[in-house]
Image (cartoon, rainbow, N blue to C red; front, side, top):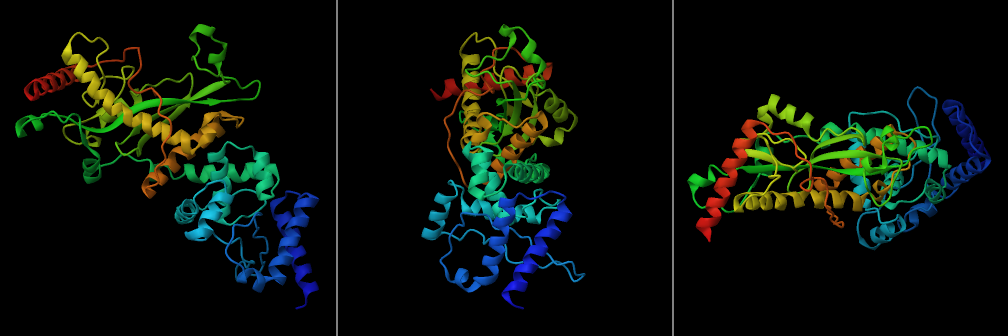
Length: 418
C-alpha cells in the first residue's frame, strides 16, 4: 500500500468518526488530525528513536476498522515516561501534574467497573484525558487556555472534563468509604495522652475522625441564583468575596487526612451532621468500641459525636474544649490540602449546581487517591467549620453524660500528672 492510499484511508476514518459522533469538526481541527495521521504513518521509526518527551499536542485515536474482528487503530499518544530528568521535564511542561499520578488514575479508571466511554469527539488516550482534567482542576486556568495547550476546541474540552468527572464520581463508594473492623481500629487515635494507667485507659475514648464542613463559592448564570441570595443582607453568609451561591462540603477525615464521609449540598441546605448522626445511631457497628467523632459546637452532641462546651465555666470545660480543638486541626489541614491541590475549588464557574457538585466530588475522590499514593500537599490552614461555630447544636442525654464523664476524666488525669 503506497503513501497515497494510507492518506486516503486516514481521511476515510476521520469521515467515519464524524458520522458516528454526529458532531462536525472545524476545518482547523480536521486538518490537525489529518496531519497527525500522516505523521504517525510516515515517521514511526523517527518518532521511536527520539527521547521520550511530552507532546505539546494531544494525539487522537481515530483510525478504527469496521471489520468484525474488532477495532484496530494507530498508536495513541505515548504515556508519560517514568522518573528521571525526562519525568521532571514532563512535569514542568504539564503544569506540575505528577506523571505518576496520571498513570495511577488512568489505570484506576480503566480497571473500574464503569465502562462508560469518555465523551468528546477526540478519543484521547486515558493518560491525556486524565492530564487534561487534572490541569483544569489544579491550575485555575480557563477552558480556552487548556484548549490551546491540547489543541482541542473549547466545547470538546468541556465534554471531556465533564465525562471525566462522571467517571470519577462513580468511584465515590469505592474510595470514600467508612472504615470497618481492623481498618477502623488502625485509624483510631487517643482523645488525649493524659491517661495514667490501664484502668483509666480503658475509659478514655478514641477518635475515629473529625466532622466538619467548608464552603465552595459558585458562580451561576442569571436566573439560576440560590434563593438565599434574596434574603436580607445581614442573613447572608459573610465572606470577603460574595459569589452567586455556595456549596456546603461536609467531611469526616481521619488523622492522616483521608476522607471517610462526604456530603455536598446547596448553601441553603444546612444539615450540620444530622443525617450522619441518625445513620450512626441506626448502625452502631459503624463505630468501634470506645470511639467517637469530634465535631464543632454547631453539630449534634451524641454518644458517637462529641462537641465542645458552648459555655466554659471552669478548667474542666476549658481543658475538654482545648483537647477537641487539637483534633480539629486535622480537618483544617485536610481542607487546606484539598484547596491547595485543586485550586479550581477557589471559585467554581461551571454553570449549574449539578456540574459544580460533580467537580467538588471529583476533587474529594481524587484527594483520597493522592493520600493512598502517599502524595501530601500542604496548604494554608484556615479556621474551617469544625470547632469554631458559635451556634449551639442539638444535645441528647446520652451525649451529655458521655461528654461529662470524658471531661471529668481528662481533668483528673491532668491534675494527677501535674
